[in-house]
Length: 196
Image (cartoon, rainbow, N blue to C red):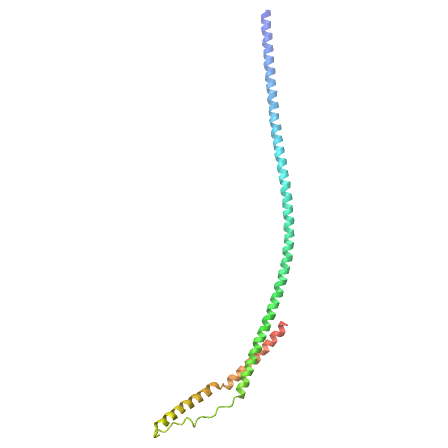
């Protein structure tokens, strides 16, 4: 082997070594670049997760505060409802008492009216018999004016008798009214006693 061949072979080896070294350097650089990218991704993810954690912590704090406020409001509403229920009960009792008094007054007024009516009917004198006044006038009366007068008297007598028979109540009806009034008053007294 000549010296020129030796130099050429040596150059080839060095070129190959240089090429191999450059290739290894490029490969190593690629690895470094990949690691840098992964580090950057990890840093970004860490930053995002920390922000998400802070947001979650803030949301937890907000929810806790909301739950506390809701519990406080629930207590207030519960107390308010108890007061409202007590107020409704008092108002209902008052209304029932007023209604009982009103009913008692109405029944008392009915009894008073029935008493007045009954006393007035008892004090009224009995109607006189008008059978003699209902006799027809003879047609042979010589004066037509008297006949007209008699006819007028007959009409008045008939109306008077009819009015008396209409105004005078039936004894059975009066007794029934008295009995109904006494029963109504008794029921009112019993209901008032229960309400008291």
